[in-house]
Image 1 (cartoon, rainbow, N blue to C red):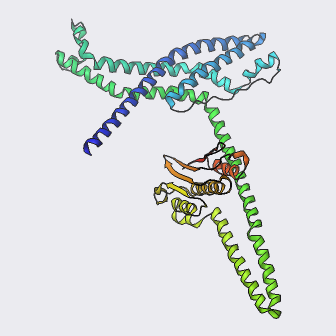
Image 2 (cartoon, rainbow, N blue to C red):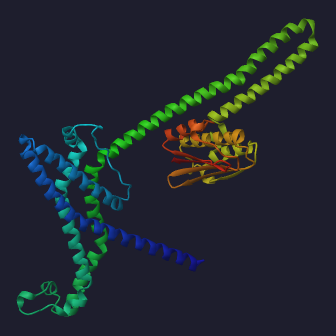
Image 3 (cartoon, rainbow, N blue to C red):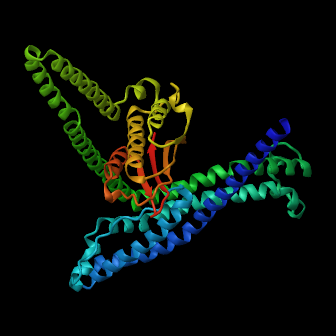
Length: 436
């Protein structure tokens, strides 16, 4: 066991080392290429902007200014394609204003001039040179210090030494004129630069990338977040309306009809008490049966809203109860940590997960014609993953109803995603992912 554990730790350490070296290479390439790109962009954009503004009075400056903004957009797209490797985030491209079909030439020229993101692209192209130059100089200086210091032992002999002007740092510090002192001191300096190299280069790369991100994708990311929040709000309203309509329908078709019959039975029993006590007894027994069935239906409805077992014992126990009531065999695999006090999720996430499973199993029982079902619930990092698979005839789709459309709204309202894979002939898989 000790040997195996050591091997695992050694493998993990080598993987981490490769990751650091790979990121160091990516960051260094990003910084080294960033300066020539920034310099070229600065020259083109500043000259174009100056000509466009200077000749604006003569009208010819407007096409030049529009062309400069289009050029800035091109340089911005190049930068956006380089940033994900450094920021470790997906590429985001903002939405630019476009001219409507059939627009005039001048209308097409004025479109980029009226687009705010195009001006942000131009500002990025003009000011990126300052950031790129500073970070380039710092990264190159650190690389030179790391390589020159760590390899000083290999070329110390080739450095000419003659006269008091060539005294090195070791002699100035009182370490003597010995080669060992010189090599030792320079090697220590090189080791310092070498150890701190990944940190400094990473900081320089992030400085460049975050500056670019603020100007090139900041507005787009903010708009995307607003759009997602609006979609979640609409989905929550839609899911709530769907749940209320379903509850109203279930109450009308079930308990309400039984309560009407119960009232009629009790009224008939009241009339039969004086003339036919035996018939009244039979009617009351039927009324009691109706009462028990009504209570059972009300309990079933309440389980769909807020099951007590979910609140008291957690998600695994609630899902086990759902699986136990299934009309077909259900194989349940669930992370038991979700039921412990330390592993329990937010109540909203638990309720949504329970609703997803309950609705999915209901669809399996009503529409799939399956003979077996597999339910898997696991937590991976900050996400809860739910998978419901059956061996039925397939054909399920979110747009076809069957409760799945409302289910998708419920999941989306909580910031999650729902996918349905159900080819004709099966099998069907309903997969939900919820942030937790």
